[in-house]
Image (cartoon, rainbow, N blue to C red):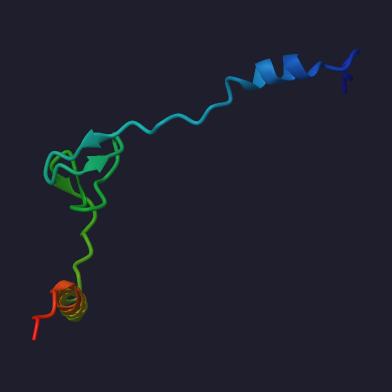
Length: 96
């Protein structure tokens, strides 16, 4: 195995490493659902590539979607109560 004759300076090493850059992945739109997909890959959302179904997309469980809706409605109720409490605090008291 060969051994370098002289030690590389910091600048030379750093200049060499300037080209070690991560590139942004290329994305195209799916022809069916218009989601961003890597070129020549099956769409993870609809499971199609060039108009043919290769993978059956996973369907959400009905119970899971109901639970999500319930959580969202609870959060909305809490936000509404907080808003009402802030309004009540900000109203000036009537002079007696």
